[in-house]
Image 1: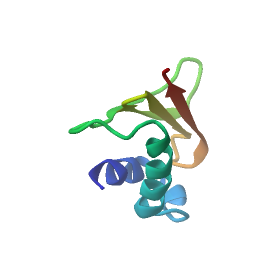
Image 2: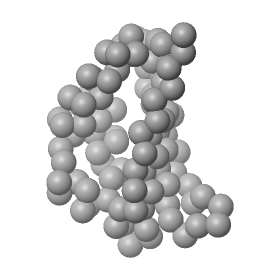
Image 3: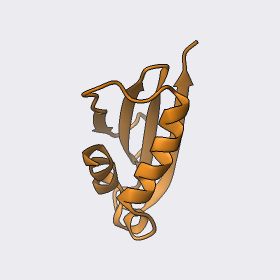
Image 4: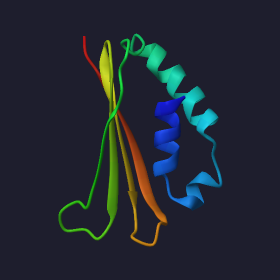
Length: 93
């Protein structure tokens, strides 16, 4: 659950008000199963930065799986309001 609490806590308050860490975890587990599950003792790479030519803040997570990985980008404005988020699933053969 720790990964999902980290993810949840990085979300702006307005997003937190509309979702729970448990819901995020359930959704992830469904998708991770499709990629062969998470390797033992895995943890996400988490970074936070301002993309070029933007005043938005991006929180980026990369979570490795056995048959690929997930990249999650959460973009929000400096006032904390969500701009968008993208979940990118890379599958390897």
